[in-house]
Image (cartoon, rainbow, N blue to C red):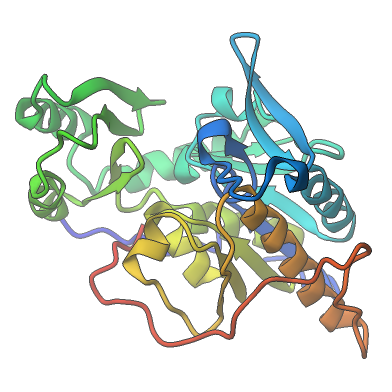
Length: 318
């Protein structure tokens, strides 16, 4: 079934761009915030960065960022329209306490929800519902996934807000061809499949972060968009942005994603989150300062690389 998965600029006239306004849309997990298992602290303990806990779950600390990253995010959010753009459901997103005031806008459920002051926008939900009628129904896709799954490697299965489905699997036991075979079946149904860590996602093609971020850009009159992400579900967002960043870990790194406006960072783990924010801060300074200072106090410098090459043709669009 054919679908239009591209960003929607909304109906009616958009407001005139605010002079110099920048919208910063970033994925959360393994881009800005990190679980203990994803920190990748490879340095000696005495040189490890101080960490700030930004999420608790069932009374236990769950997600972290470096204290320097927390400071950089607060500074960036003061100068831009900062929009978290996550695959998390609204309930999962609300567990995260980022530094600074709560963002006015947040994208959840991979674009299925647009939160405005913490409340899901009903007009956006209706627009998403209309788009999803072009795809095979969720129940059909979920049933197919479960029919093909095997109990020896399937740990759990979930549906996110009635929008998409995912499986949590034992990667060591998952057959190497299983995800590709599912993707080959799902494509004609209007769905995309991706493997991210221990999770296999099946997401309808119209459900994209970029579409929701484009709506925020329209509402705020942003003149430009910065974006960051590490997973295949972030690919459409990075393509949409005027300038984008990705770390050296994650599915996009594994796929070798390259875009002319994409800055590929050499950093991995929680230090990559710090590097993303350093890079965004420097790029923002270049827009306003004739000779931006690129060195942070304490000798920290933006970690980055020159944009290179076009993206691989086989990479999923959303």
